[in-house]
View 1 (cartoon, rainbow, N blue to C red):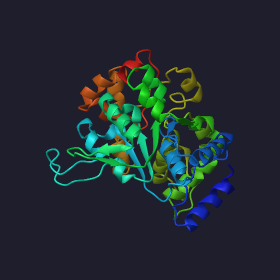
View 2: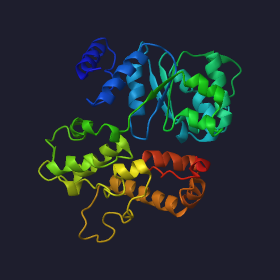
View 3: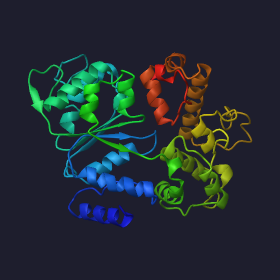
View 4: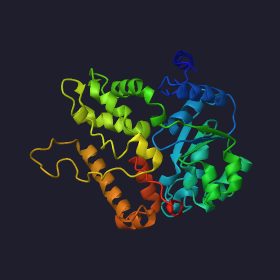
Amino acid sequence: MPNSHIMSAARTSAAKGVPPAPQLIGDSAAMQALRAQIGRIARCGAPVAIRGESGSGKELAARAIHAQGERARFPFIAVNCAAIPEALMEAEFFGCRQGAYTGARHERDGLFQAANGGSLLLDEVDDLPLAMQVKLLRALQEHRVRKLGGSADEAFDVRILCASQHGLARGVAARTFRQDLYYRLNVIELVLPPLRERLGDLPVLCEAILARLAPRQSVRLAPPVLDALRRYAFPGNVRELENLLERALAFADDGVIALDGMGLPSAATASITSLKTGLPGVERQLSLPGMASREAAPLLPLALYLRQAEREMIMQALERERYHRARAARQLGLSVRQLRYRMQKLTIQEPWLDDGMENR
């Protein structure tokens, strides 16, 4: 679907009082095919399972499906299943009555009631515990939910979209995801291409991201920067590109982003060749900016510094425990679910290990 068609549809929706469809940026053949597929999927009401690496735009694709469909006037609700404490899952999904549990001072609706008429995105749905999968399956089969502490069922009308990094079939094979729920959710599968497979979209992506991050500035990339980006594998995909450009803006001089301001990891650590072959790169630098020489190093924004510090601590724990998540989580004082959520948020990806499936 050409970009002009997307923009025309967005203007039409805005004229009718419907928010413009989210933009999936890129002119590559892969992105044009993806937009065309989303347009077809949006016309039906079947559940959609979106598969793609961390940071590849799964939620953006889900929002585009919702915005181009008949439910666009109704709510779009997105929830990260890995971020909900297991003890609160039933109340979050189905709602609760007053006094249903300690701290439930008021009756409130759950996600299904909040999204009624619209779409509900279950991000990282394969992280749901098996007990919750059973309750979710029942709700989807009957199109009704019962609030925690309630005695009557409530009907809902919601289009279910779900997202996962590796696909639901992998969870079924590992016996961590119910096969009957898989068939209920995986009616249509939408696969998002990773950024390393559409590097031709980098110029337009960088332009759009910089325009959003610095709307009142004229910012451009120095010529060597784009060449370096094309050699980088982007394990964190578009989200990682956004983080790199946001950092680079802090070091830009006169609106020009130079290569040394990008903070790109060593080309050997994340080169496309090493990522495809699974071979480890050279040793990653573990020192944080400003720690070796506080006087000489430039100051970073606090939020960025803390993000980098958290990322380094998690990486060190994972490497020390050879990427065994449970042991690394114990070192960090986190649950496995909390660690998995932080790894996704910080675009931390594990190398493919023979025993990797045991820790997922």
